[in-house]
Image 1 (cartoon, rainbow, N blue to C red):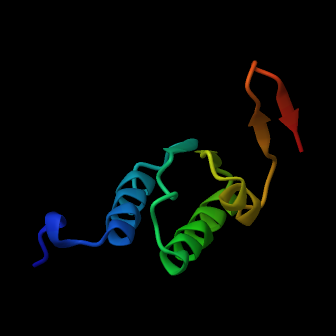
Image 2 (tube, one colour; image 1 turned 180 degrees about the horizontal axis):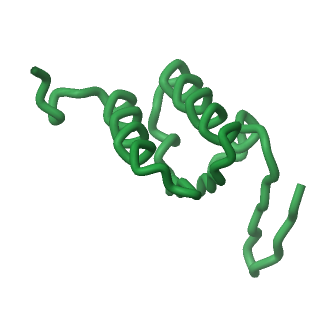
Length: 88
């Protein structure tokens, strides 16, 4: 049995994602949840998110990282200083 405190950051994010996914929500909202992950963990989590998206769930990822946003498929909305929004 592994204590949650002993899990890596990536393992904690995957555990949280799995825990929430069991509830079958229409939307998942992740606020800076991926920004501190290493590249391998981030790719694993993004793959799981894309699988969930393919089942019809909406996924909103909030991040300050343009590079991270570019790794995720889907519509992107950027909010600039002053509140201007760019959709792409």
